[in-house]
Length: 267
Image (tube, rainbow, N blue to C red):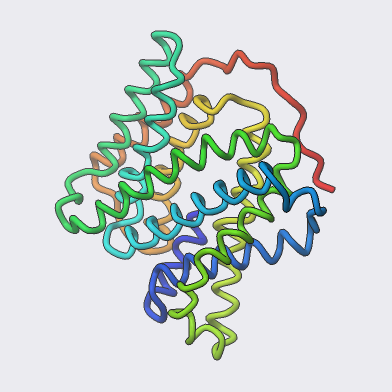
């Protein structure tokens, strides 16, 4: 996901963050439609509504996140955005061990955020908006995953989102005349949307949404490491301590007591 985000940062030099986010959704939708070819029933009634809400929440999360990382270091933006999963995890805590794990995760994320939040208030605002959308993504994604047609509904949802947000295509002009930019845009869609969100659907079918939300505490860690390797954004000592806190929190979290379901069929 964050290798794709690093590529997106490079694209920001050519086109706006929201245009990159729209291209990301379009690319993922086209690949999913070609692969899954959802039947007529996927485009009707309540199923269409749920898929559309899921796809739109996901697209808005991506747009807000890209606007945030255009103004903040990637690790900092993800740390602020993680407030969304924290709220979902907090609502699902059951034991003292769960509370302790959640507290460690929050501490780790705050340490990863460090003191960089004062650098761009608008960047922080976008990160908070992404956090709200991330919480919606978890809740809606769980319902899509347990519906039994998660991959097909993802294809429908991303298509709906691409159409609803099509006015954002205005800023994508330079991409269509540059094979290099087009390849990078497709790469962002595959790396940041298609692969990780398909994996999310598999995981969401097997665990509860609270446990899934806490597992997402690993993402600020990955974002910080990717920012270091790809973008040369060196983490501060407190951020390194924060990474250790997050890893400890995920290790401490109790197993979900819900029965594990089989992963969705890929075909």
